[in-house]
Length: 308
Figure: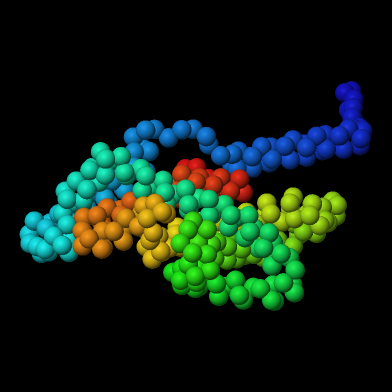
């Protein structure tokens, strides 16, 4: 007669198997999430980069030049004192380059703009933190900063000339008055968007006062702060151009704004367009070389920008 054996499994073995299975499932889930969040660092093919990044602006510039030349060729605008041809503007640029003056125009304005922006950064950052973190200061200064930001930069040129005279200090004062409110307000906006949970976690870990500001508030407010920096540079550049156009003086050198004013005084539209194109080119170059990479780094470090 066959006997039937009954095997009894130890409950502890069942528990160990279950725990091992749960750990494996959890590890698999974490690995899957990590794979989803992993940013692919594979470099794009050169052809794709050219098609997506280089070709569109080149086509746009070519279309603008074609329309510009068409206005001249078809006599829509036949007065060169009102609209010079692209060839005439190019010739003025070429002559300025051959005479060694082109880089001087650019450097005079860019050096002033960047130095003035650095001064505005040193003033606007602590001012923005003070307004964002101290309620009394925000109530007193916040509306004034907003009003100053909306005030046209050109309005500061006449008083700056009266206060400081026709010198570089006047230029820097106009840049500061134009850029500081934008930088400060950008930082205030960034601080206001910091989740309260971050602040409570920082206080729990002992990050209070200046330590909390440096390690918690500023890193969390970076997206808004970088936006304020971009806007601050735009105001700096526009303020400088306004100052160079209005407050022209031989001892100050010839910057891009002064070049624009010289073209107007000489009724030389080719020179006017030369200055406009250089001002536009410098503004775009500074954004592409400094602020756009900084903004992409901030967004990518927070998982808000993923390479496709």
